[in-house]
Image (cartoon, rainbow, N blue to C red; front, side, top):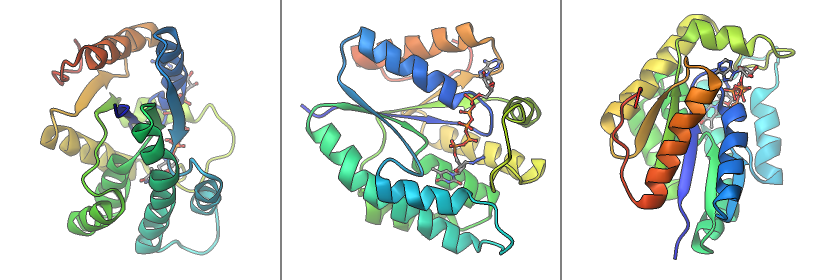
Length: 216
Ligand code: Z5A
């Protein structure tokens, strides 16, 4: 039996890394065999591409070059890690996946959705995550949380308006795919956020589709 594919999405500082740890512990407690991974990245080559993408540089990065690098990393990750794990019955939990491309390169950078959709079809065919946990938070709070970390990477240097567009892009993805997304209100205290995540995971185990409300 194929494993299930879970992705975690959201703008800067919503708490993806923090909650990925919680999800890993939840799956371990429920004796579910899983692979924890991330995008861009997840294989040695894809991690090298991640470094290229995140590095601050004097040369402006062309948005199309950025998009193609992201999908190059994704092709490697999808074919070398995600697909074999799922085929072997393991679950896959990924910190970001293609929804991030629609949000950052589509809504954020203004690249055409049709181009992203073509690359998506080429790389992952029809495969979509079984559940996407979208952590929603206002951009000001997210950036304030993220700013507690060290030096900003190339994406983190973007202006607030860029992240507002990204958040809007995510919300449009949620509206277009209500059967796949579970919206988690990341403004709540961490224990409440994790209570909501655990409830969604339990629904997935029980075969119940998400209801897509931020405060259930
Ligand atoms: N990118 C792209 O452009 N296109 C794509 O297709 C893909 C990615 C796949 C790297 O992603 C960049 O790649 C990303 C978009 C681009 N850049 N940006 N921006 P990343 O996921 O590795 O980087 P990130 O977005 O900066 O995520 P992060 O650094 O891992 O942040 P986070 O995981 O969302 O937050 P956190 O580190 O878990 O939490 C931040 C702080 O908030 C921390 O102190 C926590 O303790 C605190 N926190 C967390 N939850 C709470 C709650 N509920 N209350 C209070 N405080 C909290």
